[in-house]
Image 1 (tube, rainbow over the protein chains, first blue to last red):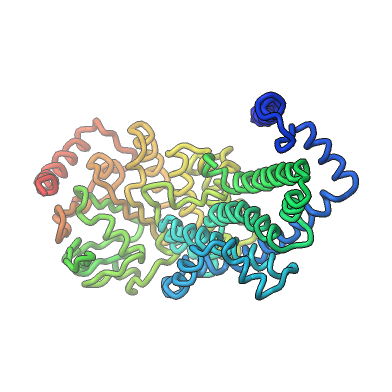
Image 2 (cartoon, chains in turn green, blue):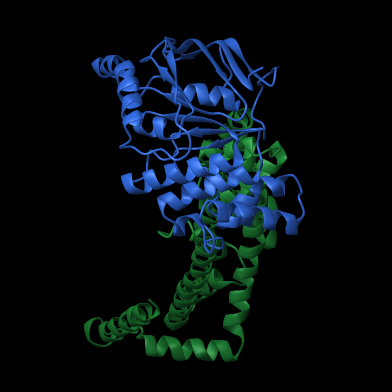
Length: 247
Length: 258
């Protein structure tokens, strides 16, 4: 499994190298060797880490807050019909307004500081987590609940010992999708208004024609996203793999 | 006084179009404490509806069900249920944790919980499998977990809804023999739902034969005077088979004709 990944990555960089050397030989398309040596330099002088941690901090703060809000709302919507009817207009309306479209409003409301970025990440996280959590609750086999009832479990016990664990794989899947969205949102937000972060690095690269820096930022985003997504897949597997090996 | 009695019990379902569908009507049966009662009927005759009402998952729309003289209201740990499929097992818990579930909900201490769970896992022949997850076990083993899970909870009676219907023929007959021997040692009252004549005679002390649905009710009750392990090739067994078969043949034909 890991051998396959390694080979896949090596071939990706190899094709990129060959393409930039022989197909589109141009300063606008630097080969990976150039990008990596630039990246290494930016790691050494701390610049890359600074941008990286700025973006990551925003993502984590918004993502954790969005999940902490979204999970209980999703559980309530999945468990109680009236709550679902009451909140569905909000979720069904707002989830079609992309977070990127909310950047302008966020900047007007919260300024160009951390507030607007965290707001946007919460916004991009919360609906997907709500939707998946609620879907997970309604996907619980009725016999799981019935069995617990006739084994003497109380309503609260059924919630914590049956409904919640049965929903965890769905919650994690929602969070995994939300994390992917967070990457899109944070870059867009930083492109428009930020003093640091990987999006700001992209924007500066364009302003000062530092094509290699643009590519360092792109590769960092790709690797970071890949690593975080692996972590989620692994935790979903660790929890749910026992009964859904397909994950 | 019988342990459970159904008095003129009826259940009507209303479809989304507002059409009433009477599943069971004037259903009358009495189950004695300690007996193994099989409810036999063609598919779609409302056997499972009867079980769901006694389990407390659904309320009757007519008549009433008494258990120990009190009307049945909602699910309770004195009526444990073994379901047909494996979707009632908790996939995130190991076999032993599934069996301990009821005890854990009642805050029984860890040592006692484990000891009792192990006892029943052994009884159903799952010793050595206790740390496995349901997904790692075969269909027959999963049904064994369900049986151990309800036995460990020590209910007043067991409700079994075609628990072996999804198993292959060999495993099914093995499981029937094991269940019969477990019943002979525990003498727990059992209501066993099945559409299989053979299974009903192998297990039941009395067999209630149901009419084809809708508006189904009990057509007749047959007492099976066979003690100990029963052999399918035994003459008396075959006589019972013929008797039950004659009774149910018309009902199956009616069910097929619909």
